[in-house]
Image (cartoon, rainbow over all chains, first blue to last red):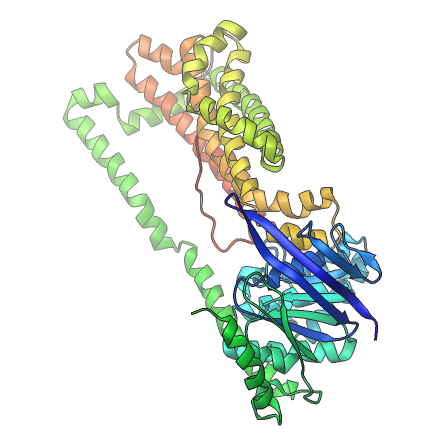
Length: 256
Length: 286
């Protein structure tokens, strides 16, 4: 299959406190259309920076970033970006947050409301449409931040440790819901996490990054069958072996 | 498989939600609490009144509540206060509106154009350090003893407090919001309308509320220095005739004016900022 994103020799330096810091070094990574790819690596290895580069909000970079045959030189409005914090706009109600992207893209009021309502229903947020973000739990905020990205139907969804701040149960529930959504509309997802179990449970491919400066250390295929049950993933045949294999490479990157 | 888990998570979220609702309810003051709020004020008025009956010198120095009340009714009934009230209100309205608009506009420019903000920031801090009332005599020389000099004083005072709050608001906008909406495809103007304006609104309102007492101070100081009418003139005139009660009548009317205007703005604030868990009125700079 053709890669939807083709990263070749991506290197990124940025200035911090007068010094230049090398965040990414020579990252080469093809991401196939419709695949679920997860990047794992130690903190500060530039995983998030890579997502920002693909979204066009961390420019410039060195190397080649081929996105559907074109170079990324400005904001990439074909992607959806789900940040670690929900980052819902606090002055908008739940449904207004979900509708926002369509409003910006000039959709009619009826179309906006209809599309938003459908997504709200699939995420079991029905009844909370007119609540403001501060009135919602962390899990509900996260669901809302996912569907406000889905609503404009981006080619690829970039997710930057989206479930990091959630408690363990809500996390599992949302992983399950994410897989369900991915199964039905087969978006390309590029997902960043430092949780190895989460990475294996969700993805087709796990990309292991080295510590800073981050680069691809190894790519692991996840042969577990789909649909997956994230609640019982550790009992899945092959999970433990894969976990230990990745972990044996991962732990050498963590400086204690 | 998706079924059971989604259900099991729902109740906890619901509980959280109702907890928030009950918190909101307890935040509004029940009757006995508003009574407690009024209590110190009422006690002060009663003690003041009794003291003034007991010792005539007290009444001479600080008048007494009943007399002040009677004085207010009198100046309102005879209409002698209206030209003064009218003059002060016009000065305040013109100075406040112009000061607020220029404050918000320049605050936006300096807050969003980083270079401009960096260049102007030290100067604004410097000018803000000057006690603006000290400039009042200069404004009288420039603009005469009429309406214009008072507008200039008020405008200067209101401008700084609104500007500084707007500027602080813009500098504190969460850059993630900007990135998110830009990725959604927002144009420069859409980013302003959908992020910068609503995100800065709480700060602007704090500045606007803080500007109200400043506009009263500006008007009164201007009228003290040189004027032929206005509530400040009214107070000053009564000082000339050693009429303590007259002074307190003027002061009380000014205080009531501030309370009413601040109440109106706080209503507006509650309407515009209903998306916030709690409304705190903090001001930066002055």
